[in-house]
Amino acid sequence: MKHTDIGKLDRTHAKHVWDVAEYCRRNGIHKAEEKRLIKVLGKYASTHELQMNIVRPQTRTR
Image 1 (cartoon, one colour):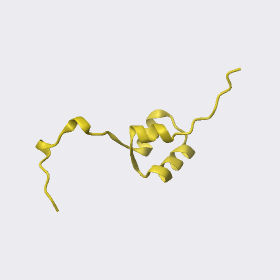
Image 2 (tube, helix red, strand yellow):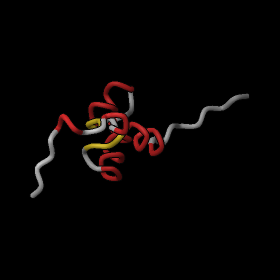
Image 3 (cartoon, rainbow, N blue to C red):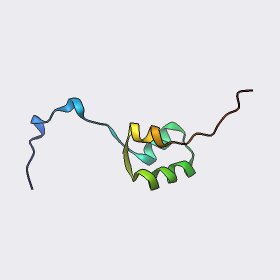
């Protein structure tokens, strides 16, 4: 295994990774949708992955 010095890492390309359950709780996403996201993405995912995979109910505009 190769050792990586944390001080030398470039932090400009770092992604914030969320616990899917925590993200759903903070954003008011229903439990059924949370379970589906965990099946699709796993326990941890980036914000972009979560936003692209959330299925929101359609609302009528009439």
